[in-house]
Length: 425
Image (cartoon, rainbow, N blue to C red; front, side, top):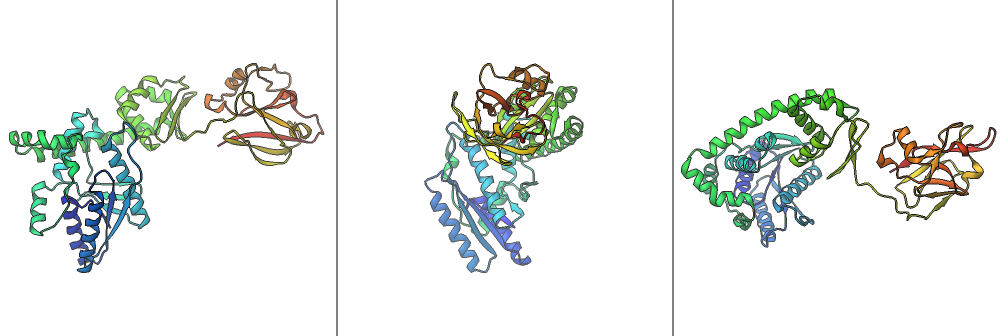
């Protein structure tokens, strides 16, 4: 068992309460601390949590500190709050996995839940956002629990005073650049003065939205079973749904493919995807690609050919096996065959280059040699698979990645020959 431990009031109280109960059950508690480096006091906070955990351990408390110092920083223009949440979560996952922990307790309480609901409302959040924080959820193979999500902030204050717990005060909580801090400093006092039960009321609203979100997710999974084919989204079947069900199903499909289903992405895909779409939509972990009525997720990054226009790479492709192609993100598989292959004498010196205007390919004996664009279309090769190398011998095209061996270059019966297959990374 572990507790995400910042050293602040809430996490200190939760860690103390958890250790008290764990001692009776003979369970060790890990305090997981993430050093963000956002405050000049971050090193002092780390020393504080180290000192506190050592002191409790000397008193026989079953607690041990595990800390990680982040070595990344927000990208230019990126929300510091969003970056901190994302990197903190990733660090907690790494520490929990390293320690073989599958239960992590988080110190969020009822006011945190009410604030989250209000902030998401002000940001125009949908049902998923308004459902705020779940009390318990499994992600990345870890069970995340918030045992104090229904506990008031005042009750935690009372616990801290009763046990005389020392804790750090985060100076960034006063930074008005952050939306939650502005809410706490100016909006929340006025709300509480006008509506004394605002904390409980908003937290209860978040719970009701969670129930609605769970029902919508179940419905979306039912629809997804009817519009997903081999991991791809069948665009025509998906478009047959009502607009609300389209959005819910698309969101479920994106989440299944580990893509952040932001409002911006959902809106854009809703406008741009149709059954004839051949578009490409970059996402954080790769790229969404539409082709022949299917939408698929392709993990990235995607290396591009490094060979300059007009340059060639000569390879000896007589030997069966895999041959890495310098300058291209992939390799050519060579296999000995008895028919339909390239003569070994030609395969001994194949010049590989990028596609050029005027390149033509003959797909079979007796068929006309046509432009690569037409041949790619006939083969159903999507645009992102058309950038492989073109193989030539004496300036004549003999092999095209994705299409195979040009019929004009096929070996005569009885000639030693090999077949070539392009395998992109």
